[in-house]
Length: 329
Image 1 (cartoon, rainbow, N blue to C red):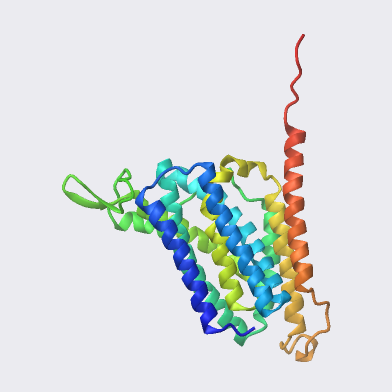
Image 2: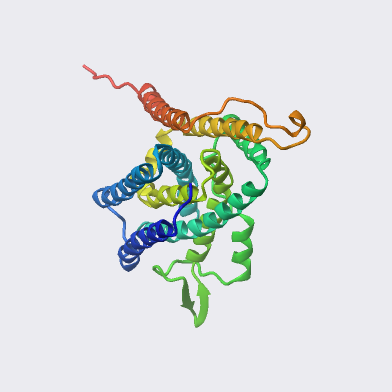
C-alpha cells in the first residue's frame, strides 16, 4: 500500500482538529464530565474510526480496511488495560476529580508522541530485518503466558518508576495541586506542582504498555500508516472510557485472559510470518518455510470473538457470584 502525501496530510489535519477542539473545551474549563458528554465524545471518536476504516477499504481495497479494524480493535482492547494503572496513578497522587480529565488529555498527547517514535523505529527495523518478527512473536507469547499465570496485579498500589522518582528528587515539588498550573509559588519560592509527576507517570507507563501493543499491531499489519492511525484512534477515546467504566473495570474479571489470548494469537501469527519470510541460515537453510498463513479476515474474526467471549464470560461470572437475596416472611 502506497499512501499518498495528501492522505497523510488530511489524516494528520483531522487528528489536529479533533485534539485542538477537545483541548480547547477541556483545557479552558477542567471539570468532571457527565455521562451524556462522555458518550457524545466517545461516539464521535468511534464513529470517526469506523468511517476512516471504511474509507480505507473503499479507497485501497477491503483487505486494507480489515487490517485497520483488526489493529484498531487490538489497540483499543490493550489500551483499556491501561485504565487499571491510570486509576492507581490518580489515587497515588491524589489527583482532584475535576482535574483528572485534563491530566489524561495531556498524558494521552505525550503517549501519542512516544508511540509515534516507537512506530517509526519498529517500521524501520522490520523493513531491514525480517527476522525481528521472530523476536516480536516470542515476546508476545511470553507476555501472554505471564498474563495468564501472574494476572495483572490490579489490586496493588502504584509503584513510582525510576524516572518519576529521579524527577521528584531533582526538582522542588509542591505538596498540593494548584488547579491546572504546572508551577506555583509557595513562600516566595517557585515550585512544580504534583501535576508534573502525574504526567510523567502516565506517559512513561504508556511506554511500558506500548512494548507489547506495538509488536502486536505489527503482527496484524506492516503498513506504518495503518499502525499509526489505529493507535491514534484507540487512544482518542481512552479518556472517555476512563470515566465511563470507572469501577466497572473490576467487573471485567476475564480481561487479562482475553488479552492474553489476543497476544498469544498474534504472537503465533508473527512467528508464522517470520517463517514464511525466513532468511536465518540455521532455519531451513535460510529458505522460507511453507507454513499456514493466517488471513486478515481470520485475524479480525478471532480478535472480535475473543473480546466478545471475554465480556460475556465476565458478565456471567458477576451474575453467578452476586449474593442471592431472599425475602423474609
